[in-house]
Length: 632
Image: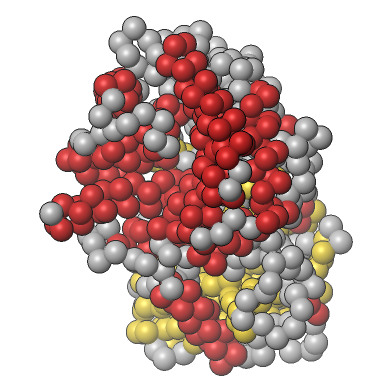
């Protein structure tokens, strides 16, 4: 593989270079908790996989401008006047102004009362009262003057490989089926449809007060809205679903309530309801380096995310979602040695073999486009700590240690004990040589420390003492080999390079808040591992990660720094950085994985659950400290 930005004699591609691809942060995110869609500012669906998050795309113009597209918007107008989420929902509302009038478009992956067993994406968890309808519904209402509205639907199945074959349904031109790759979806509308090659198009003139709709269905028997009233009713019940769900969350009456609320809705939207799993992001292969090769498939569940997911859900009082996620973890099949993999499919599958789609151009030329993730079978020793910290969090919250989780506790503690002295690929899944990464050792300490606490809760003093002793042994090893001459935690034992993952020492209580080594480590990252105040994972010139090209600053690491600064008592500095991070959210309040400080553009997969989870934790650290100060 050759990285575009690694070619001799060329200038690295700017994240803001002129391109037919919209900026990543300009996309809107829709979800029905089974799959998700991204909508570009021009009203085109640029990403949708059906029937679930990790299925092949039907609309994929996000990764290749010829890989599928679905637009409902005013004819000849590409830039809307405004876009917003309907408050408290994942429903998008776009207002358009044309020379002759105004229209409002609403888009939703609809949710409704559960009426029968879901045969499209069957549940392993108990179904709730409401569920996905497996429908994308779009409505248009003219609010002034008159506007000609255009519908263009051109699905290309299997990640842009197989153009759709269309057939009209009935004799009134209001429905058509698109087929390909052994899949059929139905487009229905009150507009008159016409088939043009591999696309369907329609145009209709609306005057003030007029409305129209269209819907795309992959439901059982391709069930679709019967008419405009039915489409609007489905929109209304979707609004009720999201607002009812959000009403269960504990949201602080604080200046940051809005970004916390949007983060909660995003994390819920990235949850696969049938199993309780959470995808790391909606997309695959959005570049971390503009035009480069740092492109990964994030439509899977990382065990590493589990503890951050549990922290965020419990902070928001969303205990049902937390329990669903823990039940998913309890169902997972371990490796032969009892260790959990670092990641799984949203259905719990273990094999995530990576392949490339070389026929796709990639986002703004960033190739290869990957399906699957080759890191799934890497050795990453931090996984044990993440699993056991999440179980301890859940146990303390629920006041009980579920019987089915204890075997996982024992297995992960035994695995951590067996491997903590060995090198691994580290938290960032480096594709270079294994190293003795400090953050991996640190999470080994977390594993044994949490296992000891869980053994105490269970009433097993012998195991508690054994695991606590091993935790102390790991801590001593880190403090002997993992601290440089300045008293700063290093990336791994063979270097003095900095790594943002050592901020986890603050977040997981590895050292007390007033420890000078912790303070020095946090401040070194704040002062030396940042670009314009935003945190890098590491400096690529100092780290053998097996890849070429520079990457942007990592948003999760920047939010971790907020939390760490708050922990060591640098509250004003933490608040200042938090405000900066909130100000670089996308126009709709979303975050990708990275932020390019030079151009202000987001990079990497989008929206990124980890970024939103870290936002909630960072906000919580500061808000709780402020509330305690008020009480004192």
